[in-house]
Image (cartoon, rainbow, N blue to C red; front, side, top):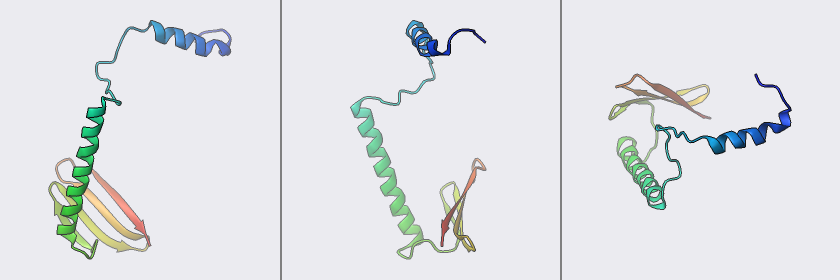
Length: 104
């Protein structure tokens, strides 16, 4: 712990950051170029459209129906509860799981 006036914190931090010549080799460039941002946006849109098509093919026009479904490595169990419509998603390969509840 260092002594001194706490009002000097911002000045000391700015000075230390200005002198810091190290960069994190694992840091991710979150901004990227406009081309990279456009490419990522396009990928998200295509994946979203693809998932809507798969979703429609799997569940039809009636929407979510109770039951157990498999989409690739994901197992979905859909059922009604007192809380609402419950969707349990299990990644078969990793064992990761999550639960989504759509209230009544």
